[in-house]
Image (cartoon, rainbow, N blue to C red):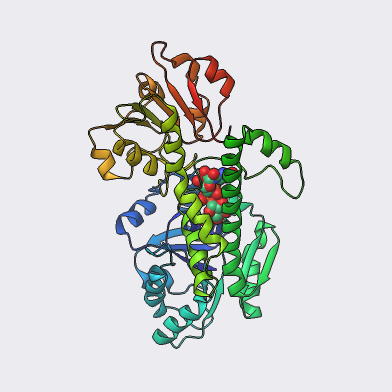
Length: 431
Ligand code: UGA
């Protein structure tokens, strides 16, 4: 079966290679000619484990091709899957402009029986909008479905190959059956529901996970004030089966391309439905304020505050295993520290340049290739991201004896007692 995937980001490209691995003919479309040229040569422009190898394998098998041309890409496809971005607007609402544009572009080339699937995260009701757009451009008898995606960056391929479930939102049985058949090789439960429920399930999953992070971070704040230790509290409550130990790690708050946008998005959707003052708006508020609040709190406890401090900032991506810097803590912490008068030497095992030109060009900002170089003369070390290279580094061995060095363990990955014994002034989260 020919399947066309529109959008070759994390979701689109991972879906493309996985469906290709099932033996389908996959054509990926993107508006970025440079990206398409590189993909046709087997080059993926972002880092995602296993993805490049799979793209190269499927290109070689002739199961995968890429184009910028909608006519070539969509003609003859049984399924056209939209995987383009749905960024947040200034007011937090979901911008579906890329979805709308791709629907207008594909409309001329779909035929009777084509299934148009929206895989991007979209507000409930978006299929009605899709229907209006397609109807205004074509007389073909297509059908529509919603197929939310639950993969995580850094483990995108495995999450797609071994999902916890596949959620299909469709109103007609035939469409539901074609899509259920497509996902059978994954051997995961298939949840067949209405398109609106499927769309909301995606927001609900991301908002629930985000709420766990906000919750554990709020408890960490209380721990700090009350003289308790968040790691011990998590251990103690995690044995409770209804709670669990997973997805409970405190830090500077959630980042990345999805949670911030989807929490804002659901807050805005609920607001638009008359549910003002909802939980989701509060989650967004608490999470957004958190990094600067933490650094303000530490400022009061270190001699002389941030002014003139040489800071080693370790980790530029939003989490380990990816070079994605969208809503990465470094992009919040770096401007804050520079404005406070500090200078920064950064390190990241994957990210080559911070995604903020003003910071990158600042005379008080520098990036180096190794952790040794970053920490050599630092007054403050911030372990921002739990990359194994950072967590596994022996900071005791590089402690400068003549200096009172501060160590900020922003992901609670280090032993407080050991680093304190080594001579660091240690700050963790909630302990
Ligand atoms: C997230 C969801 O986990 C996926 O299920 C979803 O499909 C995806 O968004 C999406 O909507 O596309 P992702 O953004 O790749 O995936 O990253 P996560 O690993 O979930 O981490 C998100 C953020 O939460 C990161 O900043 C991470 O550091 C933070 N986090 C995660 C915590 O602070 N504590 C935790 O316990 C877990």
